[in-house]
Length: 442
Image 1 (cartoon, rainbow, N blue to C red):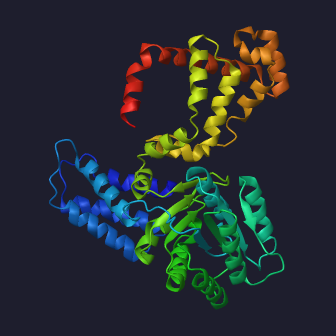
Image 2: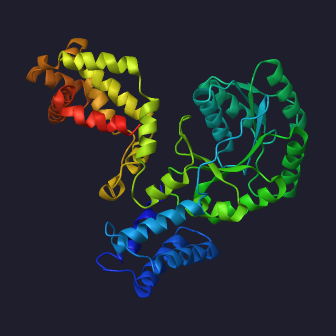
Image 3: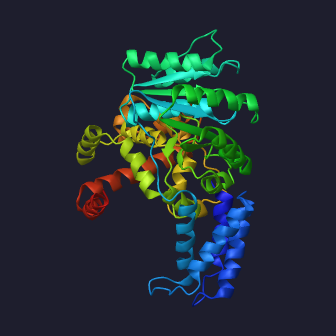
C-alpha cells in the first residue's frame, strides 16, 4: 500500500537530515522532491502544488523545538497536511432510518458487488445489524448470482427478482420486504458500466430519487489513480453522494485517488477495501493513513484487529496451559489461525512502524504459514500435545509426511521452544511491566 510514495517521501524528507535549522532554501529543496513524489503517485498537479505551498508557509519561520530537529519537524508538518488532504478525521456511515437504505454506485470492475458484501458483513458483525442485500444490476451476466454467493458466504439474505429488469421496482419492493422481515439495513447493489455514460447516470439518479437513501456511497478502484477522481466527480455531480469507498488498496496502488479525491469532490473517504476476504474492510482514518504513508505504521489499527480476534475465555485456558507447561503444537496452530484472521501479512507488516522500510523488496506471502501448518498436521495428536516426545525418527516421519526437510522440522521445533520459554517468562514477573504498559494504552 503506497510503497512507492512512501519511499519517495522518505527520500525527500531525508534532505533536511543533518541541517541545524529550517531555511527557505532547504525547505524549497525538500518540498520540490515532495511535490515530485506526489505527482509520481498520480496526484493532481494543482493539488500537489497547493499541498507543498501550505507546508512551506507553515515551515518558514517555524521555531524548531528542542526535542525536534528540522527533519522531524518537516515530517510532522507533512503528516498534518496529508491528514487534512485526506479529510482530517474519519466519518462513519449514517445508520439513521428504519430501515437504513444504503445505495452503492460505481463503475463496473470497481469491486462494488464484493464491497457490498463486505459492508453487509461489517454491519452484521460489528454493528449487530440485520442486513438485506439487494441485487439491482439487471444487465451484467451473473451479477445477481455473484451477490447471492457473497450473501451465502457471510450469512446475509439477498433479495432479487429474476426476470424483472426495473431496478426502481426491485429497490422499492426490497425495502418493503426489509420492513416486513425485521431488516434494519438495506444495501442496494446497482449496475455499473465500463465508462460513465448518460444512460447509467440517468438510471442511478432515478433510483436515488425514488428511494431517497440515507447513505449513498461511491465505490472506486484505487488502482485507477487520477481516472478514479474524475469518475468520482462525474458521479457526484449527478448523485451528490455521501462518501467514497476505495477498493484494492492492498494492490500496487500509487495513492493518487486517496490523496486527491477529498479535495475534488469534498466528500469523505468512509471505507477502504484491503483484500479479497469478506472481512478485508476498514473504516478510513486519514491520520492513520498519513502515518502509514510516512512509514510510521499504524499500531492502533493493528491493536484493533487483534482485539477483534481476542477471545477472553480461550486466553484464560491458554494462560493455564502455559503456567502448567502444557503449551503444545495445537495451541501454537490456534495462534497462527488467529493471526491469519487479522488480514494479509503484507497489510499487517505495513502497520508495524519501520517494518515497511526494513522489509523493502521482501515478498511477504500470505501462505507463509503453510509449511508450518503442514508440519504440525503431520504430527500425531500425542506429538502435538507433548512436543518433547518428538525424537529423531519421528522428525524423519513428520518431514516426509509434510513434504518438508528434517532441517525445517528442527527449525520449527527450535522456534516453538523459544516461544514457549518467552510465554512462560511472560507469565512470571518478566512481563508484568509490559502488561501494565499495554493496559495503560487502552
